[in-house]
Amino acid sequence: MAEKVGERLRKAREKAGLSQVELAKRVKASRGAIYNWENDVTAIRNGYVPALAEAFGLHPSDITPFGGHPDNEALARIEEKLDQLLERIERRLSDIA
Image (tube, rainbow, N blue to C red):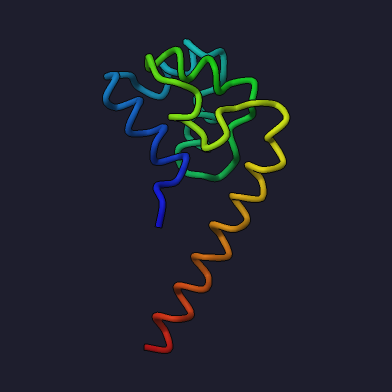
């Protein structure tokens, strides 16, 4: 399965040597928001994607599959739902095996 957005965000933050608090200050978000994004509790709002990418010296598409483009927010939600569905299918298949 593809790496989740939260996992990519956490790895980029750790590689940059930043704590959640430090990253939150840089992108003007709460530490709780960073935690939720990293744990895929909530999706990263598109307005934060460019700031996150800049904080890590990355392209926005390195953070989210659609690069935080406002027109693609719906696609990001669809992808999130598909990932959840695939996880449920994989769990059911492993239960059968």
